[in-house]
Length: 356
Ligand code: ADP
Image (cartoon, rainbow, N blue to C red; front, top):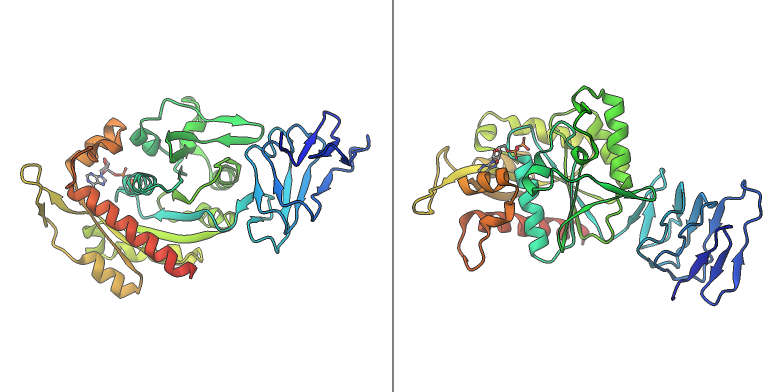
């Protein structure tokens, strides 16, 4: 009822009071619509079904865009006036909410617990009331989907947007693995094809409003990851997951160099599998020694975000697809969750420091 615009099937746009703002002639070459400077809000479903419009230009005056505003509109491009403080669009016409979503990329080599850390970090952010998205870009395996217990679901598309899966009230997730049929064999995807798929995926998800988007990067140093970052504006930086053993053999150097090569600021290092939570007494046993992550962070002059211990419950919870169960209600002292929360708090502090 409160639509700023609505349109009929002929692509005629109406303003709130049903004044015809713009009428599309039959000529389909005219497919650009510039929202007038007087408009401050584009309401829910405002451009729904306006199938002739291929490009919408959004002026500085627009400060909010409603849910499903471009639903089923066949839009190809959204251009945002560069002075608009609320939204930005990249060269592909993907619309980003400018100051709201903080992109956090999680990198590291395979097997260091990148997926586990991404999932738990996203849960921690969501549990603290942040609207959080978790994006799994690993097409080689559905590990994040498995950990979240959503591996049997498939992503749905509305219009030309992919709808993420709602894991909890404040956590949404997408995984490239959930796009594929079992018969697809993503392992043989070659570089450029993979890059294109990842780029498209990154731009095509309708997240709604998000405070944080945690992106689990594919492992390794393939150049597809370079494209990912170019594609996503608004990127705050990357966190690097290492293990005490990596730190010992300086494997994290590679990860840091790689992230810096992508022109991404390093938000910090997280040391995973650091010590072991004793299943009997709950104490942390320092199996591989302590302080490697701190030393590495000092050496490379990047922030140290904290350590997450090896917790058998964490692995089990991940395997069962229920990462939340280790945060049992009524149990206020759990060293693993305390560690994850601490990492999250340090990360948020780091992000806020940069935004100042
Ligand atoms: P990556 O994404 O880096 O390949 P994963 O997150 O899949 O690594 O972790 C590899 C294995 O290690 C998984 O079985 C996971 O459950 C386990 N794991 C990772 N971090 C921890 C931890 N802190 N405590 C216990 N198990 C962990």
